[in-house]
Picture 1 (tube, helix red, strand yellow):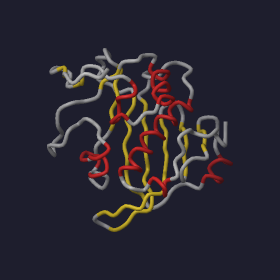
Picture 2 (tube, rainbow, N blue to C red):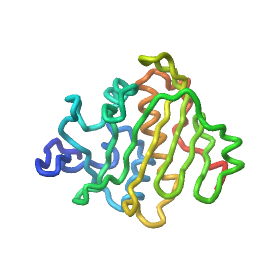
Picture 3 (cartoon, rainbow, N blue to C red):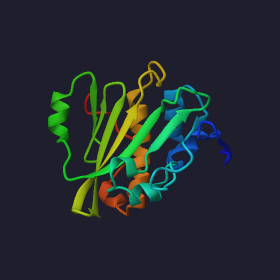
Length: 203
């Protein structure tokens, strides 16, 4: 059960279950994936507001609204392990519009052991032990015109992930949050992100 109280010193919500982080976008499988990555069932997100007066806590509505904002203006999902006072997030997930994406077939052929390509969205990869990218088709309009894709990017801080955690777990989490944003942007059909992440093209 998520609680609404806050810790005034750290600026983090007291405790959230895996299914309540990132605006409750995670399904049971990806919530379990998050628990596997963290070796815990308890998490925090930031509270308070940023310089624009927007809440720091992630919401799909605000992420969609600020999609075309500068990096400091975007609504980012920052997930922390509860009780971790290092100030280093377990996961950081952000979105940005883009006009292009890598070509999956070409990237799969050249992928090395540190990069795993998934047949997901327009292009999806796990990069090393900290990064993940997912591009999906989603026509959005910003100040400089229309963008055809959205890039979802996940960064995992070094030393925060459980040893031996599966790369597929990171992609499952990123896919579910991206699916939530695609619905918010009314491009879920265009994005065609499946409920379950398929096996990687490269391993």
